[in-house]
Amino acid sequence: MSEWIDISVPLRTGMVHWPGDIPVVIRQTADISRGDVANLRTISTSAHVGTHMDAPLHFVANGRPIDTMPFDATVGRARVIAIEHEHVITREELSKHDLQLGERVLFKTRNSNVAWAVCRYFLKQYVALSPDAARYVVDCGVRTIGVDYLSIGPYGDEGVETHQLILGAGIWVIEGLNLANVEAGTYELVCLPLKIEGGDGAPARAILRKA
Image 1: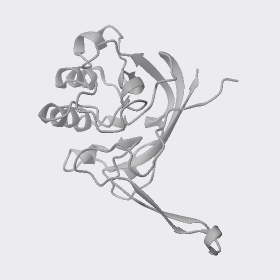
Image 2 (image 1 turned 30 degrees about the vertical axis):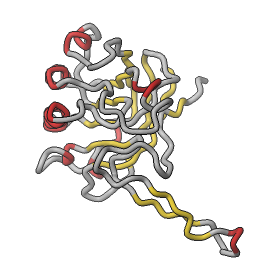
Image 3 (image 1 turned 135 degrees about the vertical axis):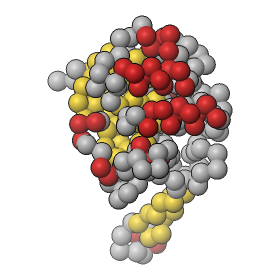
Image 4 (image 1 turned 90 degrees about the vertical axis):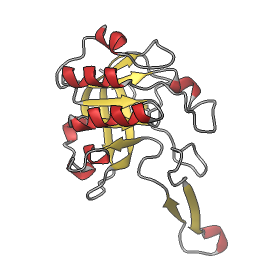
């Protein structure tokens, strides 16, 4: 049986986060070595840090919150697509991969080898879906997409448009994946966000196994 591959980014104090969001602070508030009866840590951060999911509510006023996500949106067969373009995910490149109705698709870009492994600060020039590529994804009827940095859209106004297009179509989004050790192909995906009532997003744990 194939081994599961963890494609999640560990949460840690000071990790890369979206500019303007609350940074991650993990603080130990009880410690057995100091005489406490248990070890205890508190976490302070945004819901959109590290490996996390966006619910439609994130950019759609009346969109579905994260606690209403059906399990099969992020549990089941998924396809990892290797993106060759070094700056953006384009409609032209995606059109070569024959995206299918109801498909779960994870985009592996240079982000996995650069953004997570090398840079300790936020990169504005990460690889993301252009608004035109987002329209193509919507037109294909894809159910769930995943990307290997903190946003499905480019930094700035185009990123807002990409989010509005994707989430406005009811597509579920996984952001902040690390696909460095994953080859293109078909996998079993398990990714479940924390069940935050009425949440616009939530941290998640994501794993893959070769199908």
